[in-house]
Structures are given as C-alpha cells and as structure tokens.
View 1: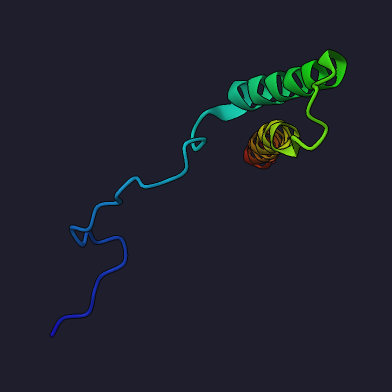
View 2: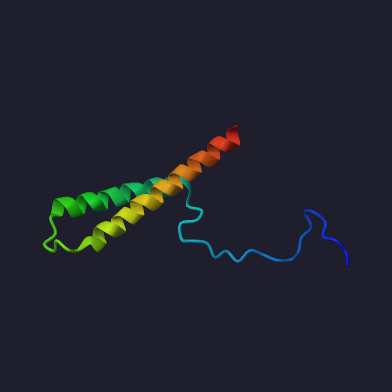
Length: 83
C-alpha cells in the first residue's frame, strides 16, 4: 500500500454544508449589525403590549451578535493577510 503524498488530491470534495452566514464578508456583517440594532430600537421605542415577548429581543440580539462576529473575523483575517 502506498503512502499518501502531501498535496495529493484524494477525490473527496467538501459538501458545502456551512451556516447561512458563511461567506457574506465585511459588508454583510455590517448590514446585519445595523439591521439588528435598528430592530432592537424599533422594539424598544414602539413599546410592545406584551411584556413577556422576549423572543423578539432575543432574535434581534442574535442578529447583532452574528453580525459582530462576521465583521470582526473578517477584519482580523484581512489584518493577518497584510502582516
């Protein structure tokens, strides 16, 4: 049996089953942050009647968090490429 050579193509292709936000880049992250903050402000200023409806705040917070992670990791990756 032969040993595998480094860099040799094994014929296995990636499936591409990544998350929905994979590959949207810096501008996508910024758009997610802005839209999440806008949704949070709308929820706070609109004054929802249901005080126990925390799912809306949770969803908006998740959008902001995902946007921050995407924008931050994109900026760090660009900085590492420069150095």
